[in-house]
Image (cartoon, rainbow, N blue to C red; front, side, top):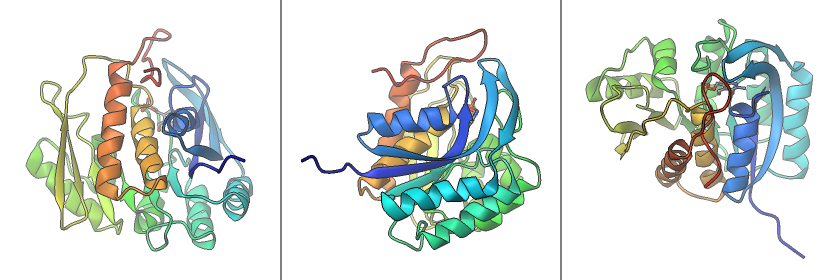
Length: 268
Ligand code: PLP
């Protein structure tokens, strides 16, 4: 008989275009040899041109999914993506405590604080930002904001290494064990430099920037790759380095699809 692979849970929304959200998460888990599980939070109506709207899943169905898989199949690492509302965030936080997932347990928990799509469409109701800061960040092993999310969460406008460090310090105040301030949206001429810190170690991860507009789902894919490595037992700095290598391959192989922004690619 085969033995079970490690498991990872994504608590996130669906992308009808298949580029981001749970679709990206599940194929990233698969590509990294981890069994993926889902607590669906919202259904977006979207294609390569953007998000036309979304409908959230009832809160008890969101928390029910988490409890169902955690109490039976077991979760080796979890991540959040689109959470849509403060009500869902508050309920998810409470449920994670009940099933022992988060920074003060043995099960790592990654928070990708998804606020808007790269096409500028809100994926989070406005009042929910505070719930992410106060309910999710203190429970997180790692948080993975991009620069737009950093600005929304802290007010810090990152323009280079000094402000990237200032942003990381401000974010750590909210209580996560580690923060990864992703520099992908920084000056297009430079390398892509991400900053990882737990307040003691400061680790700069430098990688190439690829000349493509097709980066839809990139944030989700990176967070899921990191979560996969954590599920397999890697320490945070190793998991982040592995996640960065994975997303670099996906961006390098990204493809056009539709008239707008195409997805990062799982095919390589
Ligand atoms: N749709 C869903 C369900 C998502 O979770 C995300 C990002 O997390 C997006 C869309 C936006 O993805 P991007 O910003 O890569 O276009």
